[in-house]
Structures are given as C-alpha cells and as structure tokens.
Image (cartoon, rainbow, N blue to C red; front, side, top):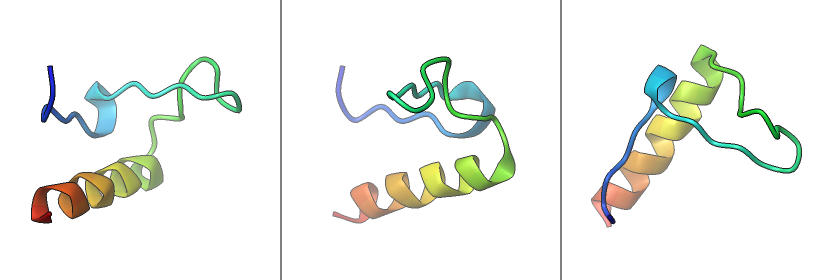
Length: 42
C-alpha cells in the first residue's frame, strides 16, 4: 500500500540506531507530523 501514513503512538519506525522502534514521545510525533505534512503538500 502507498500513501498511507501513521504518526504518533500508532506509528512504528525502526532504524539501526533504534532497533526496537523510536521512542513514543511528543518530539518524535511532531517530527513525524512535519514529514507527513511536507509530503501531502507535494
């Protein structure tokens, strides 16, 4: 599926630095929201 976004507590994003997922705190949720906003704007 494409063009489906999740932010905040419902989102799960792992990376080499955070193998068990990024922390579920406001700062991460805000960064996720800004990312989605930028992509929806085009």
